Length: 467
Image (cartoon, rainbow, N blue to C red):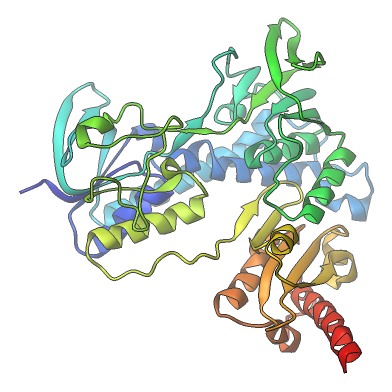
């Protein structure tokens, strides 16, 4: 008889939710993770610290209040790294306690150390003391997550040349900074350091950034970041990064040289599978360390599952949690619906971006007719009250059946606001529901009604011409 019904390798969002779900179904469950990484990368170096840092930046710089109190408004003049990390350390500590408590009260055994496969039902646990012990399980879930990908040609010192995992180790706020990669993580940190007053240069080999987002939203973000003195170098690749006593010099393939206090690489992520000895369980990973799974998150070996960032896109904490729960239910023979195709995307730049459904470009490419309804924060009383005159909400509406095809939001609270659109779309609702609904006033949620009226007025005009 195996030691456990389910063994989970990794305690991040996916692993944690898988373990809890199986425990709630009465199974004997264990989780393996390093003692300093309970909660995974998400809590220690990823989602939670970066979002907490963003809140600290917004609060201490007074950036979001400058429309009201003037461009020189700041809550604190000389912001130090200690000011920024105090809040982060507090939140991370509390979150780790919450997870430990959750695992404990659901009788999930937490083993401190790392795991590697001995065979397809057995994992060797290497404890922090160096001792090894074998743990067997009927089902195993791999939830090891990822680490930042590091080009072999760059010498990282984790102080002046770093990746997103050690950006919080900065000794001081840099006066200037080069960020290599204009993906989600790169743009989030670019906007944070720009808000702190760093002169940021973003280098990206592609011709643009965040190309899966709405074009109008990305143009707005670029405008805001340029306003904060961010320089973009699109279509450029880094040839070398030199470290000098007084800073760094980033040399581009085109010959340009960019001096800066610090360089941060944000060039994708690598699955943490190198040390798992996957071959001993009959498994393999691709060159980015990712594991292939089916719609139930099963690997090639049916009783071994993989969830979270280690399986690739979309690599979000929110989707990882649902993948973990779904995998655990399937392993335990519990009925479970497949994950809904409508997943919201949230990007915590300054201002933040969130969307669900398709973009205008995607609908045009698919030859799907749509009408656009827009609401701008500056026209809402709540927008004036909070000092956000740049935010906007965009609804993409089908003129045929009046359903929502996409919702795109840019500005304060975008990642919260998107869930109203998600609910309407998920329940098959129409734009008419939003027209007839009464929203609290003054709120940002009222933007749905304004945008819905804008879209339906345009549809009505077309219908009148046809009459």
